[in-house]
Image 1 (cartoon, rainbow, N blue to C red):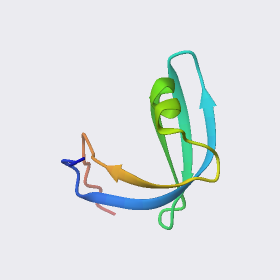
Image 2 (image 1 turned 45 degrees about the vertical axis):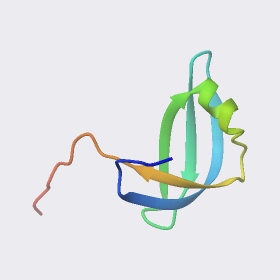
Image 3 (image 1 turned 120 degrees about the vertical axis):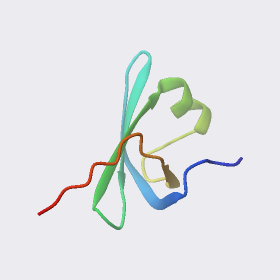
Image 4 (image 1 turned 60 degrees about the vertical axis):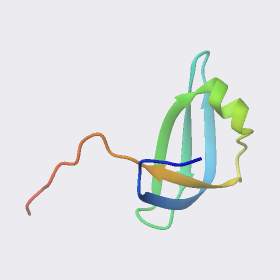
Length: 69
């Protein structure tokens, strides 16, 4: 499968909170230290995601906001 996103991070699934339609999946990543994704519960089940799984996160930002210190 090809992706339009160019940013990929290896991550470990740390928790999955399933709802009727959507699920919140949290990950440990090298940097920053954590990320999360909201995907459909059907997708969680289709992917067979379980806590402790190692996955590749494909990151595609809808908005990128520059911040000047």
